[in-house]
Amino acid sequence: MAKAVAARSDGAGSGAGQPAGQPAGAPNLDRIIHERIRLGIVSVLAVRESASFNDLKKLLRTTDGNLSVHARKLEEAGYITCTKFFEGRLPKTEYRLTDEGRLALERYLDHMEALIRAMRDGAAGAAASAGS
Amino acid sequence: MQASRPAPQSEPAGIHARAMDNLRYIRETMERAGSFTAVPGWGIFLVGLTALAAAVIAPGSPGRWVGVWMGEAVLALLVAGAATIRKASALRIPLMDVPAKRFALSFAPPMLAGALLTVAAFRAGFDTALPGMWLLLYGAGIVTGGTFSVRVVPIMGLSFMAAGAAALFTPAAWNDIIMAAGFGGLHLVFGVIIARRYGG
Image (cartoon, rainbow over all chains, first blue to last red; front, side, top):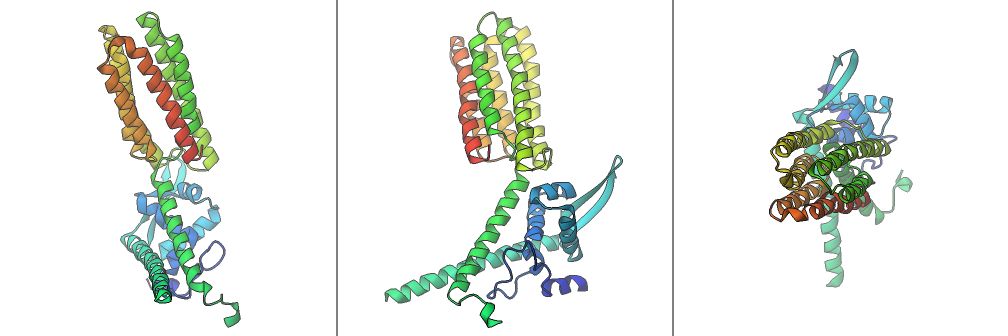
């Protein structure tokens, strides 16, 4: 858990594949989810009970290495669980969203919506004072 | 450090755009993961064409009529299957992921019921009831399977069910026209809609 808390506040996830860097006006953004591949993993698992490594790879159009690294970060944060098993002779990896992961996604969505609302209210306020 | 930051006026607009982009990405990812999106529009269109051909060549004895439409059902299954594989491959999405399996498992039971009822109805001499029964059951399969697919698919299923209801309560002489309009016309119309709105 200490690892997870550290990851949330140390800026993990900034780098290639992160289209939206930490906005200056959003200091409390969950950086674990903010990275695009990790956001994708959590979004997929929010609408599915579980997803295999290969399903996630195809849905998110990413590479084995990239997916593996980001999935591990989410797992370390306690947002997803990973189960490895054999189906016949084939090894399988299956991911599921934890309650904590679902809450984190909900918080992130609230945060994004609040940002959008604040910008809209600000623009409407500016237009009103310009008109008066 | 200050110099590298965007101009103060543009920053709020940038945050707003990024937040919108992130929400859009979440919504699109959830839609892709939760729906069977490899429904092949052009494949469905092609099935409509083969159904129109079947409607032209089917009239004759009851045995010939049922035989032609049974052959068309097999052909349609092959065409739709091949088109689904092709679309899934083009979109780079898993062919048999969870939504696709749910679609198949929901679509299959009404089709199996239809196949068995066809044999029973034909043996009992109720072949004039077959068009209504086929359209209704096919529509029911599309509606239930379509629950796991894009929104237009269950609407297509309901249209087939409406055509089936019409076939059951109109004179048997209209059966060929209703079959052509249903399996031909509806597939053509919805095939084009799906192809245009959902990537082929």
